[in-house]
Length: 298
Image 1 (spheres, rainbow, N blue to C red):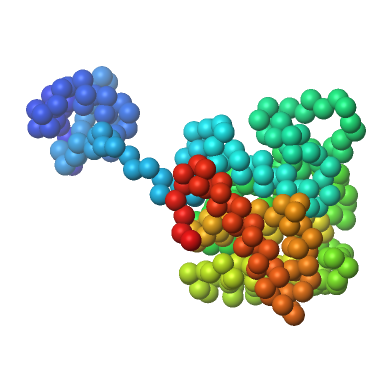
Image 2 (spheres, rainbow, N blue to C red; image 1 turned 90 degrees about the horizontal axis):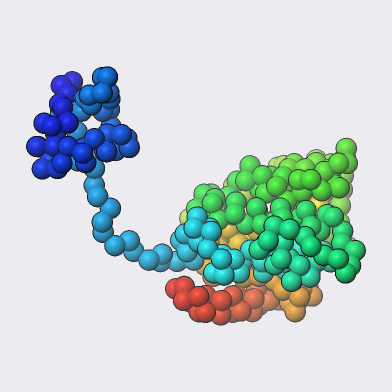
């Protein structure tokens, strides 16, 4: 390969020598290298494209979340989701932290509560849930997998009192039978095969509908693959898949909690209970999107 000097390249590209040297120093010209203080530039190198064009605004919720997360923007939809999804999903599972306490932890990364006794696990799992939401955003476009689901569980339960129990499998499937809402779930020895089959069947179709996501959620909760944390992991998966398929997400709050439980319990007899509950939650989420002026498909 023939190499040219900075002066030759500057003349060919109609640029200043200083600009060409800056391109070399910042790695914008592939395979350019220094010999002493002289840059050697491949003769077939092309000038880097200048990013002076106006960037398009994010076109959907996932793009907005990625942009706000990367920019560490406060007070936007990313901030809103971190607090609302974490508070409500943990609250459904018995967390005693208030909405204000959850927001305080997110916004300040401190505790600062002096007027009440707080369960340490509630605090740890709140901080962990923030990280899980980041994982959901980062991996939203990827196909759903067992590995990702286990990683979510690992992050959610890391550092909790459960993680210090020999029999509790953090980031892995349950070792002992458990119930969900008083109903039996998949035995531990069958979980791997059931989850693998569920994900395989789910991933066979590319374009998912709202009903497809709700059906998967029901099947996942019936398997109840982990010793604890199944509801939160299931709802995080739902949120991820909504982002992936450009479906308006939803957050089950206190007002919908009992309807959500009834929907899961009665799914085999009447799917409409759970679907209608989730649609009601979705309508509320649309108000968030309207407020922050984020486009979505009805």
